[in-house]
Amino acid sequence: MRPSQNPEDINEFNRFYNQPIEYQESYFLPSVNNPNNNQSFYADVSALKLAQHCYVESSAGNSSELVSDSPPIVNFNPMMHQGSDSCRSDMHHSPDDTFQSSGNSSCYTSDVTDLKHKLRELETAMLGPDSESLESYNTIPVTAANQVSSESDKLVGMIEMMPSGDLKEVLIACAKAIAENNLITAEWLMSELRTVVSVCGSPIQRLGAYMLEGLVARLASSGSSIYKALRCKEPTSVELFSYMHLLYEICPYFKFGYLSANGAIVDAMKDENSIHIIDFQIAQGSQWITLIHALAARPGGPPRIRITGIDDSTSAYARGGGIEIVGRRLSSIAASCNVPFEFHPVSASCPDIEIEHLKVRPGEPLAVNFALVLHHMPDESVGTQNHRDRLLRMVKSLSPKIVTLVEQESNTNTAQFFPRFLETLNYYLSVFESIDVALPRDHKERINVEQHCLAREIVNILACEGAERVERHELLERWRSRFALAGFKPYPLSSSVNATIKTLLENYYQSYTLNERNGALYLGWMNRDLVASCAWK
Image 1 (tube, rainbow, N blue to C red):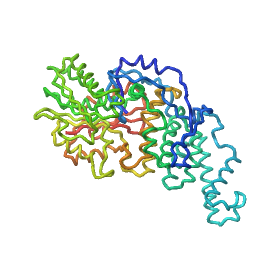
Image 2: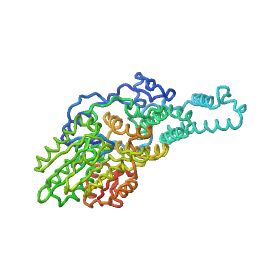
Image 3: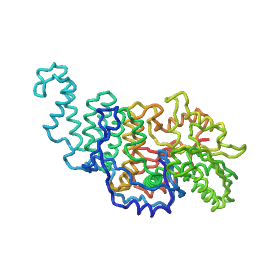
């Protein structure tokens, strides 16, 4: 997920985004009864047209080459965009909203008779077809009866939670049942959760829809295929570009990351006449536009800038073309600022990068940028090829003046499923709450932003394992250990960077927080750190 920051596109985007929402064909989340038949997962219920039951497919669009300042598509990736006023604090919703279903009360299992009937079905499944009904427990062995009664009581309690605002607790109970291989309870809870999650409800309802997607995929052992397809048509590059651009505009995460990294590079290179920047995920090249402008205004004239941009097929798709698009855009901007500029493209994924790809010249001051990319690298917990640490050692061998790191402040790399579920739930709930205050809940493009820029991450974290799980975040303290083992020392961010980001956050909702600890900056929502930025030498 990478953002766009072209201010000249805003009016056109606003015109497009303000179109009335049109819900397309809706369908339930898949049943887990037949995990071997993926085709049977997606029962068509188009006659129901209920928003709380649906995942809205993206609208069709025509692909074209994108040459405007744009977003990269790799999870959480930032860039500075000065003067943005699209996210001021006159927002639409409070993040403190309690759970409210966007559907009618018939979504809830409020009929006691129906609930008892479901419990009898559950008890029959647990005890066998010859067991007695709910009214005949005195004929069941005491141990089994107590087990069923306890399980029944817990399920009744869980379902009673949902109308009163405890959807989060029911999601947790469902994940715990899966972790404990209690499949009967898990599937029963899933069937109830399907009726109350909603892609256009409160933050927990919307997140719950995608968390439930991940749980179903995990239980069906189809995480990889669902992660790739996400039960919806892949958006065109133009559509995906617009979704990432909108996410970039409504939340400061990307601008924070790009701004802090650029500030560290400018500070480290203030006395240099030439700079070589290696960006391990160039995507749209958006981060370097403001850097070029900043260096063009440097007293004494700008340095010569050379950028090595590493690309992959995902970024190329979102961009709508090859990496040459990035080179042309940045060269044009540099020429307009009278900045000597050279672009070196590397079309390869990060795990495949070797020193010879980077074309480092002796004596050339080097800056290396890792903006929301290292968490995609497999480490020692995945296999024998620890690319995460290998890349750091390789970069250290180049003797860079500065290395910048921007990463999500989340712990999902080596965590087992259930604690990983809890971490993902709490982390993304903060993200969804921050989106909630920026856009109306029935905003169609908000639905597309969450579906195409966030849901894929969530499903991958919950449903995939091994090499197929590519969303492997670590807390900054763990990154510190990795950088230290590779031979790096911290490069504290300057106070001017902190002050500039505080000014940036004035354009956003007041619940965003900025903290400085041990030379690093943390951007958060309320009491939760979401993105961390630091530098090394």
